[in-house]
Figure 1 (tube, rainbow, N blue to C red):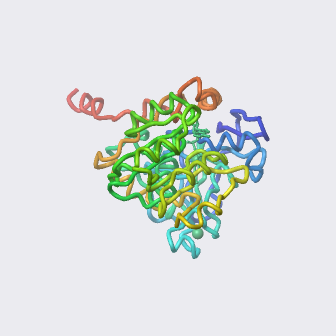
Figure 2 (figure 1 turned 135 degrees about the horizontal axis):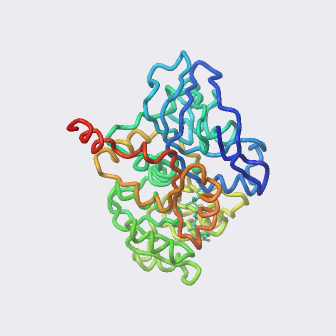
Figure 3 (figure 1 turned 45 degrees about the vertical axis):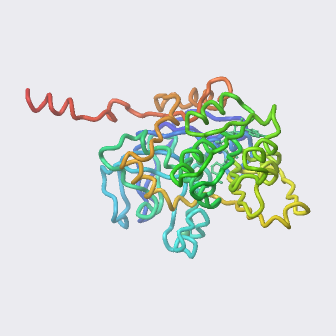
Length: 364
Ligand SMILES: NC(=O)c1ccc[n+]([C@@H]2O[C@H](COP(=O)([O-])OP(=O)(O)OC[C@H]3O[C@@H](n4cnc5c(N)ncnc54)[C@H](O)[C@@H]3O)[C@@H](O)[C@H]2O)c1
Ligand SMILES: [Zn+2]
Ligand SMILES: [Zn+2]
């Protein structure tokens, strides 16, 4: 089969590699129909995630059809269309029993495209299928569910839920990339009073307004903390969601938060950020961090099915799966291409709803 292979920092190629095989009773082999690229894949290519060994197939977000299953798999059948999520769950360890799948110690967690081969490929082996993949309702397209593999549960769980967004709250979201925009979208599920999006790129702020931010601040030109204090009668934001991953954006969150407020850090940090306890200790601020657990994926899937959540605006570019190399170039140059999420489509014709053809066939 063909797959996007990591060959060490700065090196990737679209290679012919051996087809994956069932290795454990709980495995399935999925024929990928749609996949996408994550900012984390770019971190890997930068050499920031040294656990990823050269030769690994990248990718941890996909939809596909179950092509083979191990003898222990009982909840999915060959031919089922499934969402493959960034987090795999063994279902048995103490963390999986608490629905903290991201912390799985039984062989799951973030393994795809990290510790084992991932899903930017024609085929992928998915361990612990019973507790790790989600059947996709027939009426939904791949693209409608693809972003539930990572950005939507990440923003919702690590940002919105950890930040305990409440009706009426002023929610400041620092960073308006895919994660920050997914935080805008999922914060709205909880009816905040006002969403303030903060970024250094005007084009991202424009997107934030389209996704539902009420106020936008470009913090390369404006003192964002000052503006947030002005907007909130000098109190500060009730919730601040950090969706960048650099020291300045974390420190900005702790500057613009109100006393008793909550800072939810989502960004992946490569460098230490300063925690200003000398200012924060007396203000009763709660700070949370975390890796996504994907324990809200089923709930988000229900919201998409009911038409209450529409992830389609994240898809800005589409490529055939075999053009994954060009898709990486487009995604990595987001500042020029305006890319949010790129969709890699295998055999797109097969993904079209078959109704018209079926009906034509039936009447002929
Ligand atoms: N915790 C988790 O489980 C988890 C999962 C997935 C991704 N992440 C992390 O979330 C973060 C955001 O992901 P993304 O894909 O949206 O990233 P991205 O790089 O596409 O977007 C980041 C945005 O931040 C803006 N920005 C940069 N510096 C800034 C600053 N000083 N102040 C304000 N804005 C600034 C950029 O203009 C950009 O729009 C990353 O660090 C990513 O690794 C975390
Ligand atoms: Zn990811
Ligand atoms: Zn586990």
